[in-house]
Length: 341
Image 1 (cartoon, helix red, strand yellow):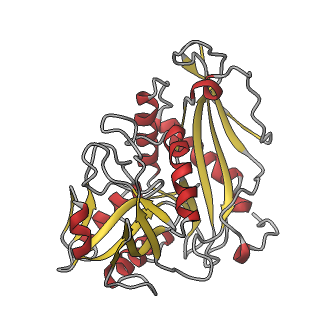
Image 2: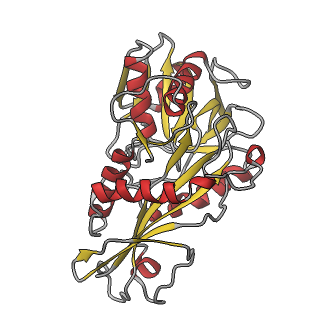
């Protein structure tokens, strides 16, 4: 298929409307078969559950063109599983996981002309989401829901190369100990907006949230998990019931162990321990790993030995290995890369 006339090299990380999206509706206790549609508009009642009580969950994933020209997605089974967990937590009907993967493949294939070519640095971002669609005025779950998947081509997260971030220890709490921090719900991201805007005003790139119960352990940022490298070369990520189970983080842990032969573990990380770390990164779908060079704790600067000019050596190896797997230059573990046929 002939590609769209897009300046792939200069794409930003924003929304570009593509030709097709997938839509399925839940009504009378069952999901319909769903369709591909060219209509990008969502029409719902003014009293819809999503508008009144924020009953919505979503996922984020990408489709890539590999080195040998195939179009693939990365671990969509884990996105399907996580969305099922998110929906169940908000008393929403679970969209069948096999149908989720089928729909992702269907919508990517339909928008094949928007999948950027290999080597452009760009990808096709895929956003599955679900929301309560019927009128709800009492505080209760909706009775009807809509599941949709939109796609948009996006440029590389880092324009002009990777630059280590400066982040601050945040006074706001991201999630309650027994709340919804472990699911990908829209309300979690709405809660983080004020904190990130405030951080930017203060000259910081991101926030480091601590656990809400004791405010002594590292949790995550508003949209990414933390990954640390100790001075003796061990990869460590925070463990908490209120952290989103990042697919990228879980993949990086496996890459560290199986491809790089590194020791890796998930455990509680006290803020006090951060000053002794050698490297730090934020991991997620958008950038894979965003390196962190400096962490500011209420005026006290923690400068990572990896510095403010480039990724630390182990972080860089993790990044290059995982992106190599995604782009087809490194053999992937079984089931990680799913071809769009």
